[in-house]
Length: 282
Image 1 (cartoon, rainbow, N blue to C red):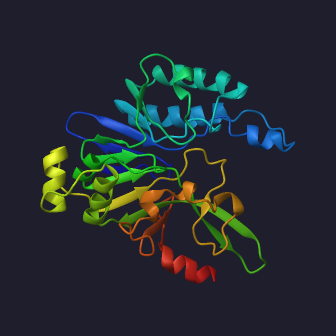
Image 2 (cartoon, rainbow, N blue to C red; image 1 turned 180 degrees about the vertical axis):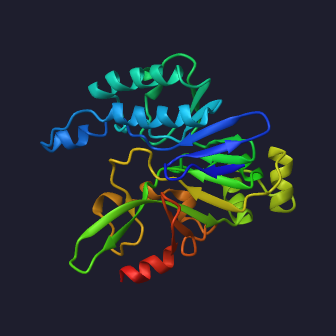
């Protein structure tokens, strides 16, 4: 069972045996980007660590799972990451029984920075109880469709509010969208070069011993609240967020009903559907 830990950008997956705390996109050492532009601010890693350990102490999960983009650099590891990331995870290991990371598009060479016993999962995701999790920059594994709910990160969803004076405020949000599992399953089977054997459901069952159960998709806000977000309700998105790579193939697919997706602030307030928010922006 999935529950959102409002007002934090985190969720809990509970089963009969254990509890898993779920976060996405911490982007440790992101401030290096600002330094390249001549804006020098101290490392924010300690603030992220305090925020996360507070949740661990409050909810006492058995496992921590991070849905990708642990670090900021896409390729290679910068000096700040080589210093911050090993220490970050060593301190976390004293707070929780096990830690797993679903690899994100920013996590190349991440394994060289991780202490022993940190589990590194593929970007295609994993099944956690009745929830399937993946990062979002690539297609999930077909086996995840046996879960009723899918959860991804990657998008850093946010909305922009304009007041009458023209002042703009950006706020992080959760997205909850309906998902047509049969459409997505057909695409995933094709991507896996698996030929149909009867219906989509039968093929999924034969090859992955999995039923077709998925009904909804949650998109998590970034755990690093210092980052900018994807302005979902802007008709002219910021140039940094226009690439297809950022959005991800599942979101671009016809399987996800993004127009009618439900948008929630971190405190749980419902803002409306994405289509309604875009209409108000216009």
